[in-house]
Length: 71
Ligand SMILES: [Zn+2]
Image 1 (spheres, helix red, strand yellow):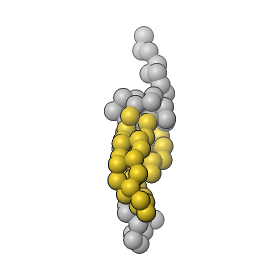
Image 2 (image 1 turned 90 degrees about the vertical axis):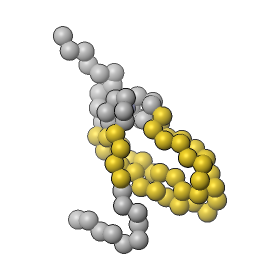
Image 3 (image 1 turned 30 degrees about the vertical axis):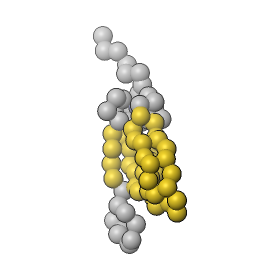
């Protein structure tokens, strides 16, 4: 079910710290804005922007955090 109809395709990103998996797509704003997005799981800063477009993130796969210790 892949449709390309003017929307930017969603891209994928995984958190380098905990490995949780995100999809995001760029959203256009009428004015320049700045902000940031932190990983919902571990709080790692995933992205910052200062532009008329920003990434809208969606958590796809949640990793347990903190990582369970292996004995
Ligand atoms: Zn994370």
